[in-house]
Amino acid sequence: LHLRFRTRSNMSDWSLVVYPFCAPLFWYLLFRVLSLVVDEALIAQKLVCVLHALLSTAVGAYALLFQDALRADLINGKWPLLHSVMAPLSIGYFVVDLTLMMVRKPSPNADDKDWLASVVHHTVMLLAIGAYLWVGRGDFVVASFMVWELSTPFVHLRWYLVRRGWKASCLYLFNGVALVVTFFLARICNLPFVIWLFARQRQLGVLEALWVIPPICRLVTSSIFLLNVFWFVKIVNGALKVVRGDASGKST
Image (cartoon, rainbow, N blue to C red; front, side, top):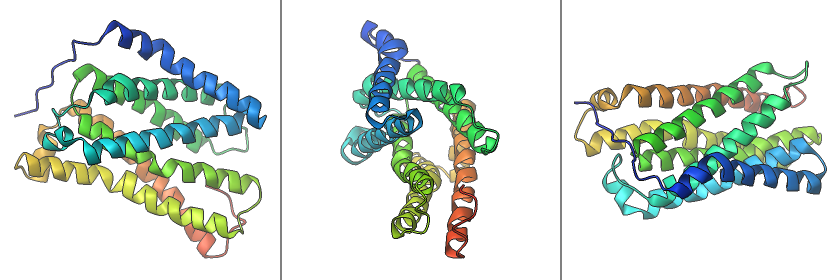
């Protein structure tokens, strides 16, 4: 039998205000303030991304480690902070960052594939969080996906080090190792592990567990997972170039 989801019908008037207005406004104002501090919009945008990643990772890790209700029922267990605070905040972040990405399209010399993959990622994430708010289930899964952001600060630190011409530094090498490890654990191993936990809790085989997950959930999660695999391959290729002494090659 497929899992049956019920829509969340108790969204408060406060939530309806926060989702479309307050959350995007918060991130945009933060972006404007950081733009004044660092005097460059692109760096400010990446700092906002890092702050969102740190917040998402901290909240997601706390939910997974200390919210017993989520572990007791991976689908129906609830933690109100996720859908009343973090979900609207994340929607606001992705809306603002996606808008900034569309305004600042890559230069002719930039890698359009990376830009397009980021646009697709943000769009899919907006759809995924919107679906989560609509069906009102899956808090454990959402918390585990929030931990994906563990690798994000290392991604942007690498970009900054390359920009400053520090690809030959020990910090760049250390950051590269941290990026590969955190990306692999948080974004590649995470989803199969959650599926295995769900199958074990429902006393199903892994393939049976995949079958009972609603099609829309399979589509969204598999799309994001494939994007993660795409980026992980690029990260590993970049790391191999450094190991081979090709630090002067093209940054990925």
